Image (cartoon, rainbow, N blue to C red; front, side):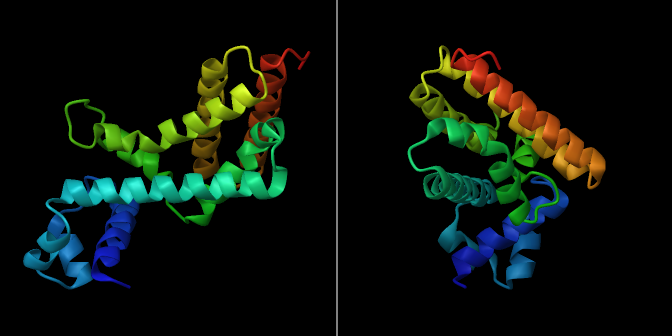
Length: 192
């Protein structure tokens, strides 16, 4: 693994384990086994490294979700929307994070004047953008509203998924899936 990639992987793991603010540059340097001089050849600051972690994770996860949509459902946007929850949860679980990394960044940087404020919201915005396009493709009366609603359900289901690992998790996911189906049907004028 290249040194730059080691920095990114280490920062992602530390942010997952300790929270985005729970570790300093020294911890990254110690784990990668390099000096500050080496670090500054690749990044100007820990914030820049964190930005790269979130941006790469966002890009990778969105690309994986879209690729699965294409592979499984082709050009059927309704099928994509109706099946987004299990794909979303599986992709996040595959990362083996201890909770949603993106949520951790949003909680760590809630102030709009902080450098990572917008970066922390990159993933939910990318998800919503994908859902808006799918919502337009199915002819939803208000694609933006449907996207907001589905994003809220997805985030809630992801939170429960990390909190519960038993039949309660299964019930919550089943309920979330029912809500998604209802929202999609209602958005396209079905009886739901």
